Image (cartoon, rainbow, N blue to C red; front, side, top):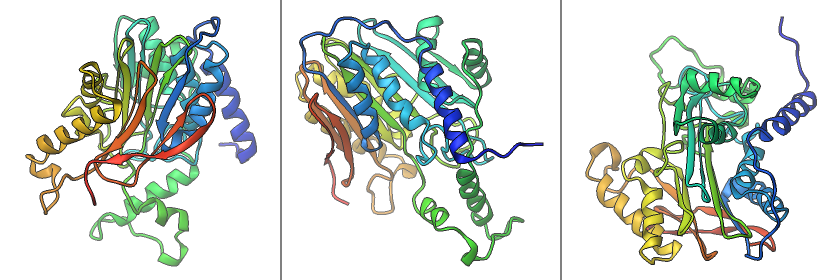
Length: 349
């Protein structure tokens, strides 16, 4: 029989699991350098950039700092686009994707469609450090995580289960699932079902030595076909870095980045001398030009269906965010303070 657990005990147990998990594979600290550090993230990453900056100022590796930063969001049951509490696939199962890249070694690792692991970004770091592979998926990723000491956790929270169940009951009026009376449906369910969740969190960190690290982690598109993999765990699509140039990552509709290797293109733009902002806008134009050729990627009026958001930082400490459609923000910590900033958009609504 399942033993009920209070929210307080649940969160305490989750926090304890997080602390132990995040130590697996972390680098030792080193003396702090003289460069000004920068941390950038998606709008849900304000606590992530605060934590990452705290760590790099203590001499932690930039990738380790980024991983600990996004771990706060991975463990937050109220963020339905990442980790614990993430909205599940169409079968009601939470499947997570994550990737990391490490500037000093140009290493990278990722996991896709992994279940029951609270911090997939930390597992991606172990794929990078303790295997010859770059990407491990599904059951193999779970076995790899367990072998390295990552505990299994039930990721489908009660709130996420209720949202999924209501989606299942209301998506087809002719099927055999019957919805409850409208007046009994909780407000949080109605709110969560307004847009389809594409979420995700990315974090790029430039440390006090001028070294870069980045990670992207997600529960993926809500109600996805089981086994669907987006851009987040694909090096070059959901994130990319070159320690001599800069780092970039993305959130939004992953298929648009898979079709264009968008993050790698942004870094290559910076290599050609473009600023982070101009490199992002150049890639946004490329996505629109290419992807509107496909009928399923465009709206009836011919405009692109879906949005992607980008976050980039260059080797010299410049940073920018950008998107195809307006309304997005990014989290930034410039070494002095953390804040949310609006990002420029390529197109109007």
